[in-house]
Image (cartoon, rainbow, N blue to C red; front, side, top):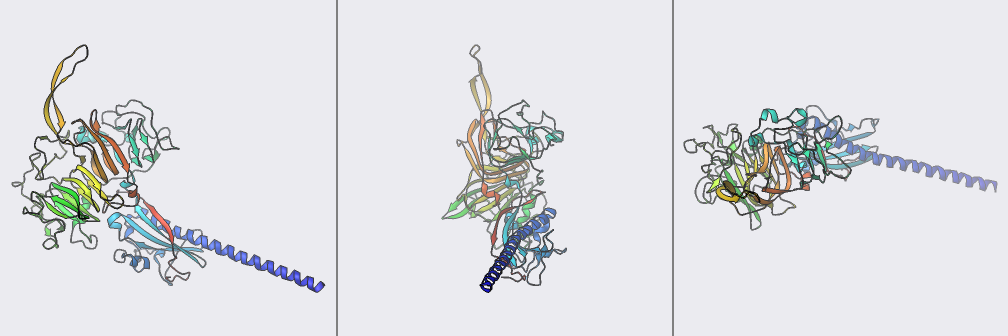
Length: 587
């Protein structure tokens, strides 16, 4: 009995030790398993940090990495001069070590940047390793840009070109010494609803307006409000509404705008095959574009009478594009039937996932798109070749003589309307006019970017007429006669589905103070502008209805403009099958 009892005790002890030991092994395995995932995320964060320090880091990666070659990025990435151990691959390849892990946690990552020049997105597959546990995640990383906001402004004042105010005195932030009056500051007022993220580098004036989601400013006072509770006339006000849990705008560093959109023109060159593998379309002088859908295919009708070449080569535009004589995807120059200069224009497919750039008529005689001033003088409002100004229309004038005139015959103006099927960005060197509704054929997949160096206008033409009206009071009736401006067009309401940016000036309604009430201006997308634009004044113009297109958080119009300074954020992230074995070999 003693022997049997002793054996039982030995078995129990042995069993206890076995259970305890296996539990320790399981605990270690669980710890390694979780640690490997954390190491993979550390890899994503490391790549983000490198992009933040060097925006050119988008070009670096290991061209031999499996994820890179599978996604057709092998020809667009290269190893950096300063070695990065996270770019290692294979059994003999290097791994980067997670800081403070005692060399026990490692990671490596692979880069897919083949979409970067199209929509600014880079995909990363990061793999973390702890012990024998290996896990991988993929993430889409994109620059923070103007399209992250429904509303973005650099300055909260009217464009000095339109107001006639001193740009020297007024084109500065309120917190940097701008006068509190006399610069045509514009307030968010009663009835304004901003249904999407909003940011201004300037101090916002907010009165009885509602911000339904995040709102930020680059003003960070030592104490007190981060906005000015005054109206446009500097009168105190109340009734402001901010997102739940907040009482004022939060702080966000300034987001710098480029001076022009000229860099987008580069995307229409044919002699930069590495950087511009798919050139877009170049049009010269006033250009009218109307989108349509024919038999399920996205088309556009383009009138551009002063275009000589629809693509270009050579730094000065003096070289004929190599594809010009045989390939005419942008329409054929000339005045014959079906050509760009004909009365009905050219009907061509929408250049999907690409860009259209409309430039001023070049002044250099060596440029292939040059037109002599004797043929096309630098006159304004005398007819721009594509139908503007309308017969009887009073063309707008601007307070500042530095503003390019409306409807100039040598201006790089583009006039846009219609229903878009495709993904496209339209850029103009001068003005961009929304001459009618601009909508999507499929709101889940189509996307449009509209950029201009100068103003983006909601077209609202007016003509001159003389009217009589009762201008007296009950006690002192009398009749007055005056010249007023009445809207020529009978249409009301306007919808623009697009990401819109004016890098040097403003987004607003043409003749906002004339023509009577025009209904509702609906914008579904994003608006960015250097100076705030005006859409109504008194009983004229439009009521605002701005809605953020949430797809713009992860979907960018092709070749859209990015800020001069920016950060990179993750738009999507998720775990995938581990890319490597514990020894570093590919699975």
